[in-house]
Image 1 (cartoon, one colour):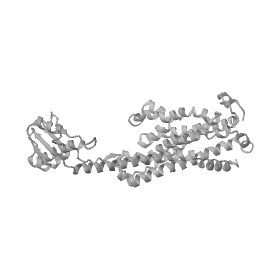
Image 2 (tube, rainbow, N blue to C red; image 1 turned 90 degrees about the vertical axis):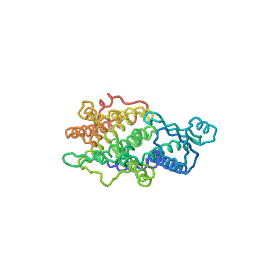
Image 3 (tube, one colour; image 1 turned 120 degrees about the vertical axis):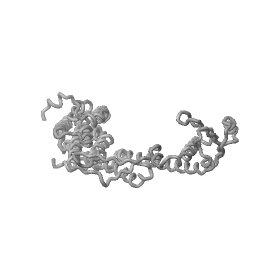
Image 4 (cartoon, rainbow, N blue to C red; image 1 turned 90 degrees about the horizontal axis):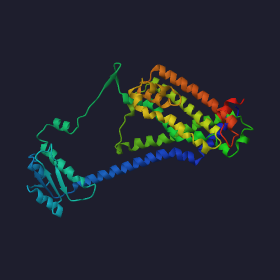
Length: 403
């Protein structure tokens, strides 16, 4: 094991020099930044167009059979009250009038009719906006501000929930422990293929024979696994830092939710449980992907198993509503305790707060034991499969060969 440090440094430095690593790491934040930029420019353009529309004047005639529209409001909007509906529709058709509004007698049953001159797909919406503004201005003085707020759905609410005699905000409670679920998802989605091919590169270029003359197979594969852990941390930082920076700098300009991060509850127990589940889950699937790479002769053949592993990890997301609404169901407990489907259910239920103590202990123990077993198998697979260039190792060979 005295060569472990050498293997670790070599793997980390070699991977950090690869363009593909940085492309994979930067692709996500670049895509998010591009989306933020598009949203910002779109909102800015829309606001400018809306402001320009408000300042535009157009000729307008109005027929009011409801009796609601007030003459002063029509004067405010520089509209002319008329009675001949068809004649004014013809005026709009012939281009002699920009817009004509017809308000029916019973607004609760019949539709307001808006006839207008085409001024472009976006600007055409100004006519309906003006017709609504005329109605609102006409009834503004007939009802109280409270009634207006209720009808316009502008009433604000302040909801407070209590649990065990203490004020409780379920959404904020799940943010801190839920971070581990997000990190696991990002790592496996963007770094899984690197784990899968980490043990096949040397076999494909046939330098593994020279490496194994000076370094034990166990030392080599453990060094690779440790380097993967460090590289995963580098990738997390590379992905998260630009996203957080973009949110802090431009979040207010993108109409995104304003989340106050200063008063997020920090439940040490749930955060600790989330960290343990995350570490055990990451080690389990790192070992599984490394084992698959060690048992197959080429990266292309190993890639065929990648979809199966991703299905095991993210398949439980289809039952996400059950994890929240029916945590005691048999399916939820099976998915939470079966090691290869447990990471997502355990981390999600821990974040939500419906993970029982016995499920927590059992789940972490099963994940940890499975991770140790899978890592041991990965080492054994690499020891016997490192020099297999043309075929996969069979299960019988893996367990029948002597060390």
